[in-house]
Image (cartoon, rainbow, N blue to C red; front, side):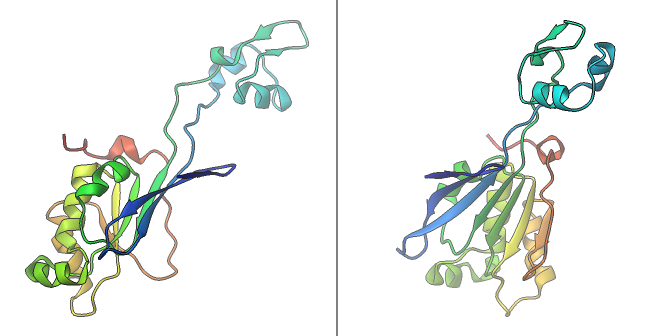
Length: 191
């Protein structure tokens, strides 16, 4: 299921958590093409409404009669940003595709690997499992949340970093910026 808003799309997908109907969410901004300033200058395209029309993909005619198609002044398509948020979950195998290529993944990591049996009994992930998912899906950065108070946060992050380099701990009410072009700076997804 997808919800289309003006500036982004929200897609939801099922996640497994102890037999309870649960969902993860993927927020995506659309791909964008930027106007090429050097071409605009060479064609003497004025600032304002004419450039805005070209940016929307429209063909325009300048005051001197020159007709310009948007394709002539638009650069290559650049991907939009994507953020995936997953709460409680008891497995990661079904999540690889819905998460693949996200610029940022926020997911629970309640337990450490040494307590994997306890994690399974409660229907939660280990930090290692979250790190392996991030690596396999080729995400840009990993934010861990829902950490058990029995562990030091640094230990949780360190465990996930054994599998994925860019790990951060989520903090209630904190704000972060999802990099718009994070895809260019990440290692390739596992195949």
